[in-house]
Every structure is written in C-alpha cells, then in structure tokens.
Image (cartoon, rainbow, N blue to C red; front, side, top):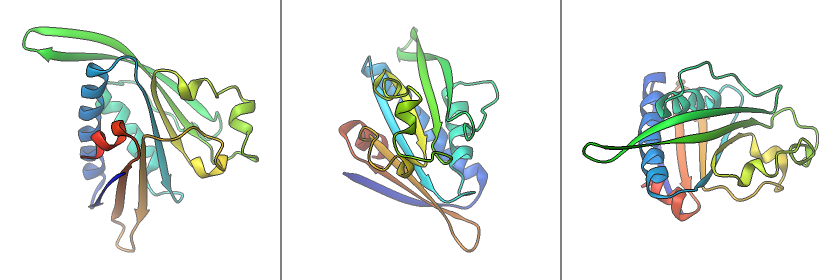
Length: 171
C-alpha cells in the first residue's frame, strides 16, 4: 500500500491534482489494455468528491456536462483518449467511465440489484462516491481518495494505492 497526503488550498489546486492524476491514468491505459481501474472517493457531504470527479473527467478529455449521479446512482461517460506513445505516433481508444454515487442507497446490495456488478469489473474506470454505503459488497479498489474539509476551508486529500496500479498512480 502506498499513501500520499497534501493540503488543497483552492479549487484550482483540486483541478491541478485531478489533471496530474489524469496524466498518469492516460499513461496506464496506453501501456495496458484492457484495464479496469476502480477509484473510491470518501468524504463528508461538501468535501469535494463530485468536484474532483468533474475535474478528472475534464482532464481526461470529457467536454460535456458532468452530472452528479446522486439520484441516478450511476452516470456513464465515454471519452476518446488520444494517446501519444512516441513522437508522431498516435493511438486513440475509447475509455468507458462510470461515476457512481451510493449516498442514497438504502441497503448494501442495492448497486447489485440495479445491475452494476458487471460494470465494476469491465475495462474502464469506475469512480465510486460513498463506497462505505455498500458495506463491503464492492470489489477491491485500486485507489482510494479521501477528502477532508479543514476548519480553514482547505481540504486534506489522501491518496491510497491498494494495488500495483493504484500504487503507480500515487507515486
């Protein structure tokens, strides 16, 4: 397990962190295909989980609106990644991203009942807000991002890599 912490003083620093992470994610998807990446986002209401996700999707190349999946449980996205492996050589692949928000779940198996079990193991990225609501029914995460609001309105962010892929993203 690899862990890294930092204080975010502004929303622009949140955007910068998401951009840094997206750069590493693009590199991973260039090297390894297919790849399933599962990211847990943990934090209180208003800690910045959805804001972080919006900036991550934007940095990965999403140009449309990013809706909070609070009521829908899941919002899917498809991004055409343009990746450069060597000078003057480009490859493009479609990256499927599923943004989950489990906050309104009433029981731990609700995400399974909704038919999302396969989604969490398919190639692409699954970002899950409020994973603790599923009480251990989710598959293991590669990366956990914990956002905590400090008294001075800064955010403490902790990135924890659980797998080799997650550890590469944290380092």
